[in-house]
Length: 110
Length: 115
Image (cartoon, rainbow over all chains, first blue to last red; front, side, top):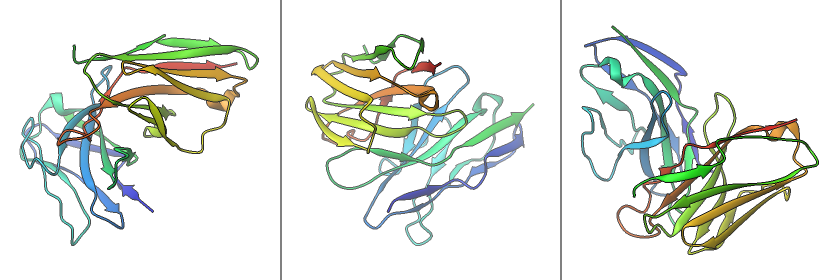
């Protein structure tokens, strides 16, 4: 069975401080991992995905298959980063369905 | 047009009512999804349509009936709902194949209250 764990429901950091949002997963095959973000009063949107290995808004995430983790990191947090962050997994096969973690609400303190 | 639109934004219905939620996208996506999101919880997948055919039903009760009349539209018909069905219902779409197949575009949701 697939499982996505985000251990922190709430995370507060000061502006300019590094931030790391943790995500661990369990899946029998080779999943695709994503980070989705929901800013206040906005719709859920894709932030980044592991296969593209890109940096979006200063965020990066590396898939560690040994530790089954996909932690989201940013070296210097900004106030506009305050949002709800969901780690999500999509399994193999043609379904394209996403399985979301419980989410971490990040608050960046000015 | 890179948006998924959903109507209505808010819906209040009684347990004996019949209502429908609508979702529309014009991005040429051939996969569409319904999710249910309870307060302070992540979205939970309900249905997946692929090329206008139902490909996944995550054991959703029959009082929820999805319909995909064409490649741009997705409906969710509601009948005899229970108060615990009150939630935010999200629609999403994505390409069916290719490198961007797993990038889902979400609508703003319909906030449903069952009284």
